[in-house]
Length: 358
Image 1 (cartoon, rainbow, N blue to C red):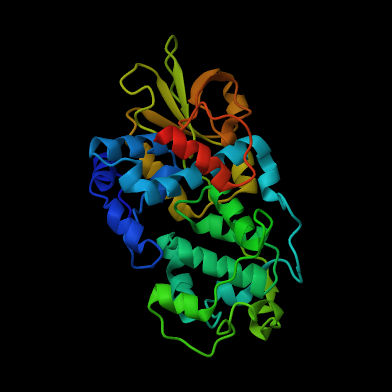
Image 2 (image 1 turned 90 degrees about the vertical axis):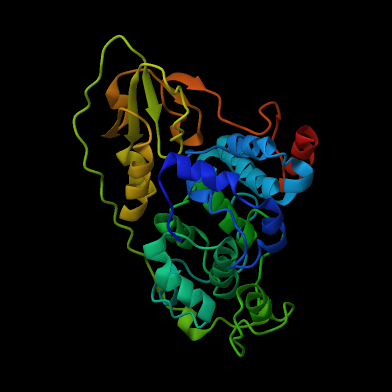
């Protein structure tokens, strides 16, 4: 799958997306998914923008519920990040049960887990930067609940390569699978994997009934733990050339919406902070994708440095990544900006949100 970085092609992708086919087939790895996640994660398009374009086609909650609900998961995770901050990188509700090791299985890095569909996807993952959501869940379930690794380091490894890497969606999805952000551990057995991937593999360490999987011993080849190498290569940048007397609009790799103050005179800066990428590195392919998306914003300049060192008060869109920025903070795009409070589960959030959307 090749992801365009041209604005009009991304909008056209939204407009031709078949929500009914998605609802029928989304769980199959060959199903009709939207492939919009890299643009949503980068803030190049926003959830309200996508929903509005659906409405312009006459698609409301009744026709598009499954897809809009999936968009709402993203909003739920972002709300949790706003509310919890860096606590999303810790066991957020419950301690993870049954941990026997840390790091990541060597077999995952070498694409030798023994589950054919996972190994095939893993071989291509660094090059594509994309995995179907169910493959991510199968992998998290295998690492955390079968091989009994703590979720954090594998989640960091996956985030590093994902074009659609969103810290909240990634970390909290891993925690959901590991049972630290849900009420049970998620398992995927071989029968389930075969059903949704088209694989016909049998006789694997996952080829058991669900009630039997938790009691199985960890396969030897999954016990060998390593620390993944996640080197970060800073982008090449030029000195900023700022014009006095006009506003400065600030973008990040989570808030790259080209419609943000579009058409207004101003300096435009994409801020990439070294302190952030030291903690949360991304692969060169993802950085290239971000920089290519930024080219849709006329006159934007790339700054690799700390925002505070700019000594200015810019105008920026609110996001958990920029809570420390000083300046004019504009509202984060939301399906329900007036919806207040914390929600203990996605479905308690969805119940209130869906009533507003209706």
